[in-house]
Amino acid sequence: MRNIEIKAKVGDMVRLIEKAKKLAGSEGTLIKQHDTFYNAPNGRLKLRRMEQGAEIIYYHRPDVEGPKLSSYEKSAVASENVESLHRVLDKALGSKVHVKKTRYLYIVGQTRVHIDHVEGLGDFMELECMLNDDQSLDDGQKIVQNIMNSLGIAESDLLSGAYADMLQNPVQ
Image (cartoon, rainbow, N blue to C red):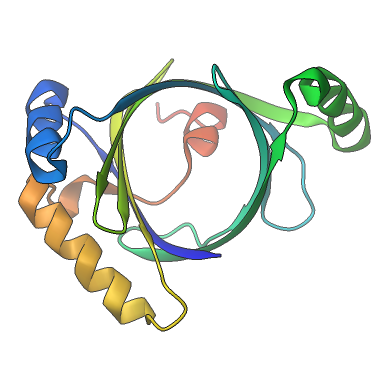
């Protein structure tokens, strides 16, 4: 699976949520997430716990500003197996960091708009344009750029790393 992603710092979360609601034509969905990142030899590996269930996610993407290609795999985890899976992964690989966030999710065409409040970091937004098999990187970048423009996200607001990186290496 592939998508084009961007992440940006948010100055006015209330205003951005209103724009996202209008663009998506919906009130969106509120999701509370607790991600545990593990030491993985290639890419990133996390266990995501949510009120609605859990999933294990592997992904690889470059840490650069602007739209970037992300390749990923994920699998649902039965609720009765979440804690035992965490123990196994923690013993085998070690946990790196926990990321807790409140996420507002909006769907705009083939793009997921995430507006996040991350504990210990602040407010952010992400766009994830899910690429179809016949779509190129350029196709996805154009879609993401159009949504960025509609939401008023400036190039100067874009970030390169993951929340996990920001929590592990806070800027002084």
